[in-house]
Amino acid sequence: MVLKRDAASLEGRVAVVTGGGSGIGRGIALGFAEFGARVAIWERDADTATAAAHECGGLACVTDVRDPEQVDAALATTIETLGVPTILVNNAGGVFWSGILDTSPGGWDALIRSNLTHVLLCTQRVARAMTAADVGGSIVNVTSIEGTRAAPGYGAYAAAKAGVVNFTKTAALELAPHGIRVNALAPDVTATEGLAGLAPEGWEERTGHNIPMARVGHVDEMAGAAVFLASELSTYVTGQTLHVDGGTSAAGGWYHHPDDGHYVLGAGV
Image (cartoon, rainbow, N blue to C red):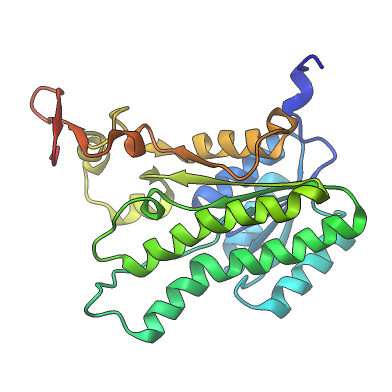
């Protein structure tokens, strides 16, 4: 088999992106549309869902992906309007500070539901549709670098994201006989509109000292990795977590010293 340049094309494919109204999800949705996919945005914020769908010429499904009935309804609407999805990106999630000594059962449950439970729910529903139509497909779960390292103050979030990494491996094995590949993307700091609105001036330059590539990531770089995993460029890749993080996961504690740029082991700022 000779690799063809159109292996990156998503023409004729239907893609679902959860949490696709803003940030990384929106970037991935726009990237998919650029490569020819018809995109359904599953997003609980009606305004951002509609805006993102308009940008990518897709379908807005106002959906809380933590709710099984809403997921079922969104999937039915997607199939009726666009066709059976052959691409799913489980991107929805949320985080808040929750130290181990202060985490309540309710707070723990909220973070697990927001970052892990819906991954099972959406994967299960969409994979059932894929298998019923005998079309195969690609599922991409957005986890985080916090799923593979300690995260003081964010234990529940990190546990959920670690769960996504392991769930990705198990789902890959179970779904492989059905022609469905399952992989994950693990970003570090990625510049989004939400982060830009909260971070102090100069945060990107300061944060860059902590990243081997000396800068924060961009949503388009996450989109590029998602297109790779969704397309025929990665037909033999499954069960993997791809770190789109500028080298942070590889660094293992090494940082650029802010004065001279040389690597030091320890805090870089």
